[in-house]
Amino acid sequence: MAAVSSVFRRGLFNGRVAVVTGGGTGIGQAIALELMYLGCSVVVASRKIERLESAAKDMRSRISQQLSLAEGTGSNKHAPDLSVVKCNIREEKEVQRLVSSTVEKYGRLDFFVNNAGGQFLSPAANISHKGWTAVIDTNLTGTFLCCREAYKQWMQENGGAIVNIIADMYKGFPSMSHTGAARAGVDNLTKSLAIEWADSGVRVNALAPGSAIYSDTAAANYGDIDLFSHVKESHPTKRLGRVEEISGAVCFLLSPAASFVSGETLYVDGAGRLYQRMWEIPEHNKSKAYTWEEDSKEGSSNSHTTTSKL
Ligand SMILES: CCCCC/C=C/C(=O)SCCNC(=O)CCNC(=O)[C@H](O)C(C)(C)COP(=O)(O)OP(=O)(O)OC[C@H]1O[C@@H](n2cnc3c(N)ncnc32)[C@H](O)[C@@H]1OP(=O)(O)O
Ligand SMILES: NC(=O)C1=CN([C@@H]2O[C@H](COP(=O)(O)OP(=O)(O)OC[C@H]3O[C@@H](n4cnc5c(N)ncnc54)[C@H](OP(=O)(O)O)[C@@H]3O)[C@@H](O)[C@H]2O)C=CC1
Figure 1 (tube, protein in one colour):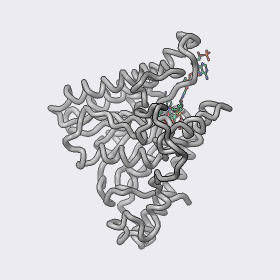
Figure 2 (cartoon, rainbow, N blue to C red):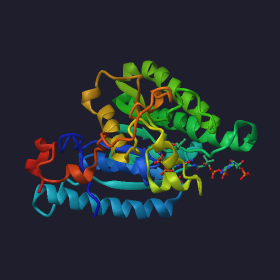
Figure 3 (cartoon, rainbow, N blue to C red):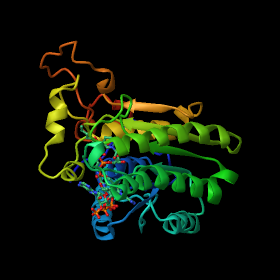
Figure 4 (cartoon, rainbow, N blue to C red):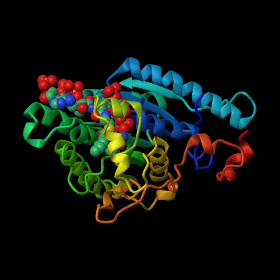
């Protein structure tokens, strides 16, 4: 069974509750797993309920095995809970229900991770009105609705932290102009909400993964076009990013280590957005990926937590 780990201390999020949209696949699944590993109960929400339920089953096994191993007891009575909710973030009523059912079930909502999103490849000139609207509604309006409901139904009175996953649209996003526009909107929304909601103790940040975070589901979205290999060749690190390299950064933004960080966009892209071809980067293998597999091994550099691990 694939390992789950974290560079953060175990129990960091004990008793906390998070919603992760799109939490059954790729980056969202890694965020949900790392939060659970750190003690947080998580609600994962998306449209395809069968896929979500099957992912949740696997995630529960991975976490319960990992926590049992780490405690060395074979059981863990404080194991965090994982629920699934069918929700299309484009539908206002479904978003309202997602938040109300979470608060009803767990009695709190500490963290909201707006990870659900996506787009299709197309030159701008070929994007239909319907296609444009689908991408804007998903990435911009869906994220707004989730932020608003988390705030109104819980965080306004009780505080909390929100992380909005966007994309690397720093230099525009040719071939994905709809998502570039939507994510730039979320980048700006993040700054407005960080100010408007500061007096409720709500921190709002964005995280922009570089366009190279591989998962089978992300790749499948582009059919036969092997976008990720193409990106790898022209990336300063000469490799793809890993989902756990995003989840760790999300956990940082949610954690007290970021208690003075709000309204910020963190690019997790291995300097991909800064790279211009004028500077030639030779083939190399010097950029070491952080992986849960390695981190779980005894004597890893994350040794401050190894006392509680096998
Ligand atoms: C350079 C490397 C970059 C790599 C960066 C990677 C970034 C990532 O984000 S990877 C993660 C990718 N994952 C996803 O994108 C998953 C979610 N995506 C979707 O659900 C769709 O892409 C969606 C956002 C368009 C929503 O789909 P859906 O709700 O199912 O909407 P419809 O199928 O009803 O489509 C509505 C409308 O949109 C147009 N359209 C949809 N897909 C395409 C396509 N592949 N090509 C062209 N146009 C498309 C089309 O107009 C649809 O209407 P109809 O024509 O009536 O079907
Ligand atoms: N991988 C990468 O390199 C990059 C990814 N990103 C962004 O990171 C996020 C996660 O992507 P990644 O894990 O890579 O790819 P995935 O395709 O695996 O994840 C997309 C997730 O979003 C969910 N989703 C899509 N539309 C909706 C909707 N309307 N309502 C609810 N859930 C929805 C999907 O679930 P379901 O189909 O069940 O609804 C799925 O779980 C996305 O926002 C993506 O655009 C940004 C930059 C680069």
